[in-house]
Image (cartoon, rainbow, N blue to C red; front, side, top):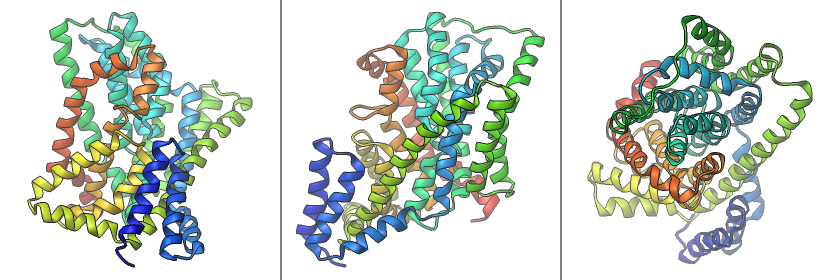
Length: 432
């Protein structure tokens, strides 16, 4: 291994050029790694072996099943019932439908683990409902995409699994448990903001239900919500691993959608499998390509160079954490989440561990930061999906998002500088 300025320039320069000309990120990662390897005389067989070994991981088995479970739940009527159940719980207060928006994202996030899936599944239901009640369209979209970010932090976030693989020797179960309180915290902060806004703007009250109607809706939704119990309860109690819980969640969602809610027909299974396979192929290809890129970065000692550079600026823990957050916020706004996890983890993890930050804690900080990037242009996936669903201009949504950025930043600072928020449950379950 060596520090070769020309090799670094080839690796990072070719990657930047390929991304700017809109080359697929996975291909850009792989091609830049191969170009640098040729310059460094690294056998190309070593690069391909690294790509294969990067996806040869038991923990990664959870990703395909969680993606498939999310597809089944989106098409099987579970999202509709989650919205109705949330409406029963918080819908009757002033600004109730906005509160419902936060709560349904919390429930769906603990089942799907995907922010885009949350927006795509609950957005078409809750956004029109809010607009019909008199909420401004941009506000409805902004709240929907902001609350969807809980899905990234709460289990079963597949981005947590990607981070665990990239970090090495980090327990997925610990990461899942570490995301619980930060995810709830984000939901609580958003709800507090909505409650304050509801009084200031005199937002409408939500729907009211009789006791009989409430019980009927709760009974109807309990089967879908039980998926959440399988995922979190199984891991929390140590009955199953994260990978095993993904299989059980997928099987349970299929049973509920086919035989209980009966909104999924046998003919729908093939299209669902095709959609899931497309997503799985993209994720796995990206992980393989990032494995090659990371291998060459390590060969060039780029992570240690960046660590030494940051530590030479300051050894103050607070300043370093602020710098790391700033870097992640900036990078998260210009590239999608999964590649940024794979690129940033080997670079920044040595920096934060050198100042005593637990890798599990850093995983939550990393995902939280990059999650905000899903709401910012130019590559804010949730921003664009939500605006399209709500039929609102992206510019209007961004304007409505400004106070939500502030709320999310407050949560980020709390999670960053109060480790117990992330580490209390993992330490209680698994020990320090």
